[in-house]
Length: 175
Image (tube, rainbow, N blue to C red; front, top):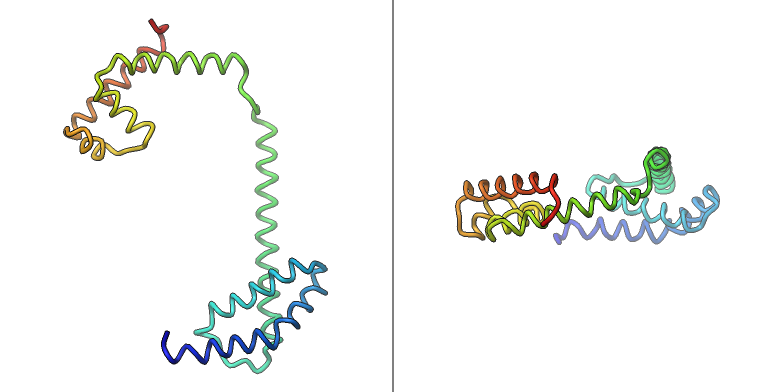
């Protein structure tokens, strides 16, 4: 910390000490909620601290604090309106989508997974490992090639083998 930053911190500390209680009371009267008022008061001083490098000497600190607090209240109300609209949209979407899969859909998914597992068992160990690393772990071809000690082209071939095997297995029962 440079010597030039100390006066700014001292000014902010004195501003906080002299005006925090007043701002908190002003916000409490305006908002009707002590907890919300405390949050806004704290955010007001945080915003001032963040802008302390560009902060002029304050002739009327209370006016400056109320203006900053009012702007924060506007920002919060806008954010709240956006959140409410988002929640209403999610609620509307949730009403349109089925909540749970039917028993038939669950059975079909389980059978498909069993077929895929059988297809993967019939692959070479490297092709199976490449498939699992790529599709379950999200690894890139280069990372898989490095781990398996093969070229990226070979990893690509392994993945094609695995996908073709899985595609064939989906249409057949597991033996």
